[in-house]
Image (cartoon, rainbow, N blue to C red; front, side, top):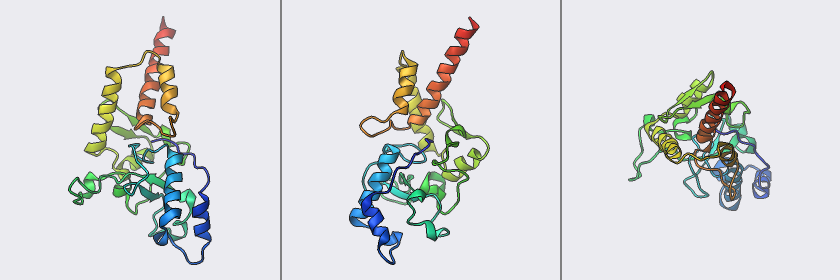
Length: 213
């Protein structure tokens, strides 16, 4: 999971919120499109939780960190909103999947998470492994469980990305790490933080070997 630095809400959304008696359910049209685009831009077009590629379309959810049902006063707070994938909520035939197969917002529902991607500590709470699994440290354990980050689909995707990287390992790991930490044409690489962690580990191992010589 990548730490997200939010910018400012778009003007269209701000103007909408100034209208008397509006609510999130009434958000539509240009203000909603502008809001979704800003969230995507802040995140480099990857899901706030799992890191898969998301686009500026109706498949991308406007996620509330604190759910609307129990935190209604925060439903129009830009600081409470992120862009998330659909979490595998529907299969290719548009049939609803069982909850244990879902992830991200679709799995989280109205549950609280102990820490969000807006927290600076988020990247140190999750460890990704070569087999595609992820293990949480401290409150990260609850985060993995609540968001379903070890569902088969995500494990398979992460394993595939790591395997592909290892099959074509770059010569300059420092340059690769810089690339992964940066946006390109406004986008992060899909699951970039998984490879960031892996490359950082390889660099640390290299330095240890050099120091031992």
